[in-house]
Image (cartoon, rainbow over all chains, first blue to last red; front, top):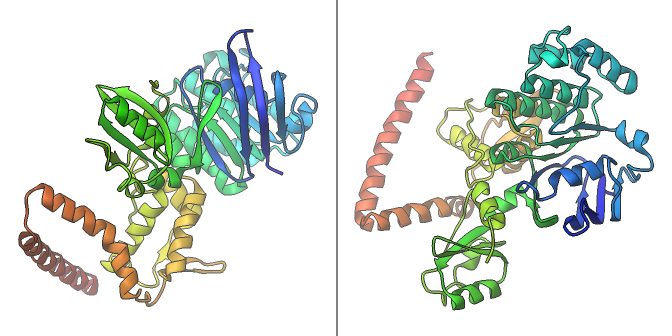
Length: 293
Length: 138
């Protein structure tokens, strides 16, 4: 049994445009999965479905083998969750918030919570309404990790906070990994952060998985082929083994392949001006979801 | 020892660590018996997942370059085993291909490239000599 099992999940906010379209995702305990996708790809919707915050239209969602909508408390006690727009009670102080979470979570680690308060340098009597956006995010993260959850779900933890704070958020997640071996699923637009933390990358686009691979395999076993724009060349690229996606940019065909440049060496001979090269994850991501022909 | 990683590099992070430790041993910047940072320390220092450090150390241990002593930590092995010539050739092949491509691209002949290699070999050899003298004088 995987820790997260999402099968054929469908969900629509409106009647005409589905946000998730037959989404499948299985995550094993101990992995760190980075979720990449453009705004509107369905990342937040997926993470909210995992938290049991919405009922799937079709398909199933299971965490630790349980349905998060039917068994919210049993599931949520084992999860830490930070959403992009965390809502903390405005008038509460940090101490009050920490005390409340300590009541709710039997596994609350007092020492870890204290250590994080010191690291984040937020005074215990500071109220939420007096905190910066970054500080509020740090408090949300503290509350999400101090009960040492088996699963940590982070929705854009770095958005809208400065690089120093983003790095601290990353370091906190790494500490949790080192001490508790937790499973982490996080969405981010910061590809560099994803490369530091994740061992597996899931790229989603229009409510579906377009790429799901180990990061190390992605670096060595994927490439982008470019060739001058031409219908016959496009047809041949689509027919070449390993083909994933194709788009046109600046009169160049740009095709993503699940194959290394060495694998493709002999197979591109018939396509005039075609060349394969390894690219950084960020460039691979842009070619994958940056609009197709 | 000083390890640096570049997350966006085309080489996986664990391989960047493996390469630097190997180079450190080969250039004698890391001595046999030297203790390496724990998974946790190195993960925190480099701001990467602890499992990535584990993957790198597992590879190095498999190569015989480092060993884990229960309860004590990870150490550079006393006498790093010599890999077979075939292994060493394979390990260098990618780097050599890249070097040749660069040489051709800049219009350098094989003789000129060999000349450059000999020159650099002399320089690095001299540096290593002076490094080890420094170590002794310490």
